[in-house]
Image 1 (tube, rainbow, N blue to C red):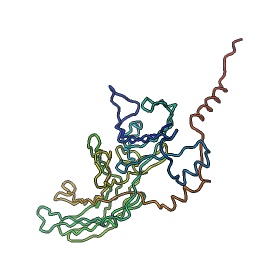
Image 2 (image 1 turned 180 degrees about the horizontal axis):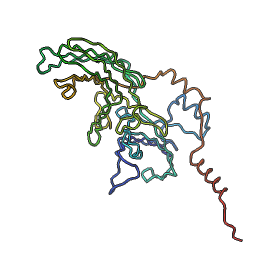
Image 3 (image 1 turned 45 degrees about the vertical axis):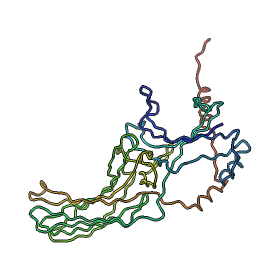
Image 4 (image 1 turned 90 degrees about the horizontal axis):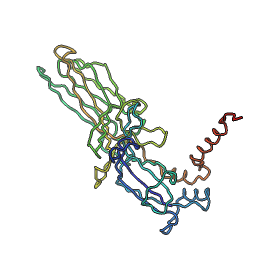
Length: 343
């Protein structure tokens, strides 16, 4: 009996094969023989001890090596009519029984489990993002100043992002609108190095800034997947089965890691844009903009709470294998089938 861990980048339907080429690239593969075991068993974790107590003597614990350089579980959201077209990084644990592990393994001889790799926010965040720009208009003696800042560098999923915007209008023009948006930039570097920039949150203010005046305003944006369900190409954290997920977390590249094996790099930025009137009104209006990079991530989990959850044996719930359930349902359907009278 063997167990394997595989990391793959998929960019098409799994069941489509064109002239021998599959729409996937394997990034990592690791195999362990668990029965009969070839290595001396190591110390058991609290969760493994609980599982052995529940399952009995036929349960065999094992450990899989999970390298730190592997990418996180990220996928690009397909269009509503292209659900089967998957593009992203996923991880699969497979257990199977065979005499020769190099031969092709049939599905009926194996079981598979999808897992996720999630990256949490660092304990120490970076400096507070801030930026400013000056714009000199034609025929204007004095410039327009725009400043913006965020309260911190790292925001958590589901957390509102306050943006402080300061406009110093020393021109004779009127600032008609202030727009604050959150843009997600997904860089697919594994096979094409494509960039996908999507707006995932937007807030507008019609409050005008008259000539030779100043305005300081706090605008709040909230990037959520719930508001972007139908947008194609948005990067999401990998999901398991029908469980819900969220916008992909920002990618943190560690020193010495090869960028080409990370699959999809995700970054976020706040964009502040001013719409300024022109000589002919709305027909010649111009835009002044700036960008503030930040990180959108999950908070670091409390290791104490995680250990307490693993030690709770009463919380372990086991379900019968899905194929057995399908067989039971098929037998029920067969018993209900009516046959024609041959008399």
